[in-house]
Length: 87
Image (cartoon, rainbow, N blue to C red; front, side, top):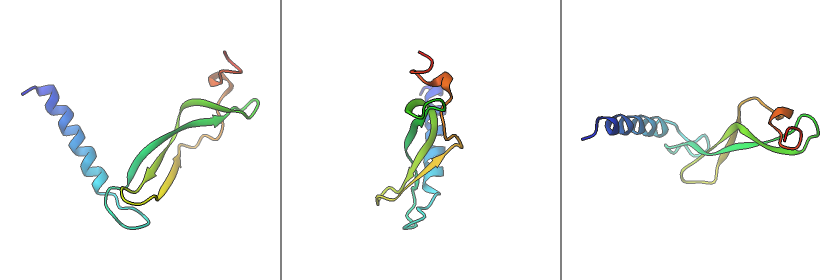
């Protein structure tokens, strides 16, 4: 009977409806959506992989192994977020 719990349950229900409304591009099964996050980019200074803030998501089918990587536009991490360049 917690009002704050009702808000959380409502938000989860909205996410579920959104997820079920998306069809897999490969098999047309409902439920296509985020199954993981991408967080490794090469450093702009010396091109070695750096764990950074999230740079994209992995979308996938609930039944098959079909996956798509959806990047947010970044292709390199800034030197300020690199632990080697900026310890």
